[in-house]
Image 1: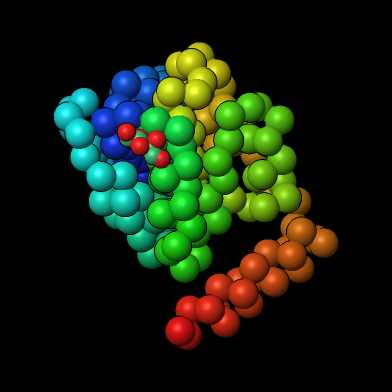
Image 2: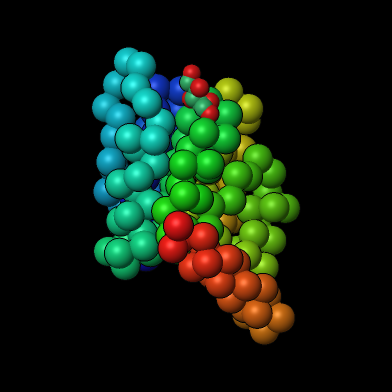
Length: 150
Ligand code: RB5
């Protein structure tokens, strides 16, 4: 399991905490920035993480901004990304089981560090159930292909 992780200034502290937690879990990761709490633009960080995942170089992506919303919108523009905006443990689990989400977005201004770490751990361990859910993902891919032409 290789994880690509990034944040803007609004998610910088949680990103650093998540990196420490990944170290504790023995999970390999690459930090795509940002490197300080100075103001930056979240799409500049959503893009490299998303592309690192869709290229197959990394298995999963984690993105943190103030709300998680900007990061999730930007990530979901990249073909092949299924980014889930998650702020509770239930949806962290179910989005893996049902959506096979490959990128996780969270908001540092929405949830505390402890919950963010639990969500990360739950999401990374969660397994896709396939079956009827695969058929639905195939429909998302078809939608992406249809609009990708324009
Ligand atoms: C930055 O102030 C903030 O807009 C950003 O972190 C994020 O919340 C955007 O969705």
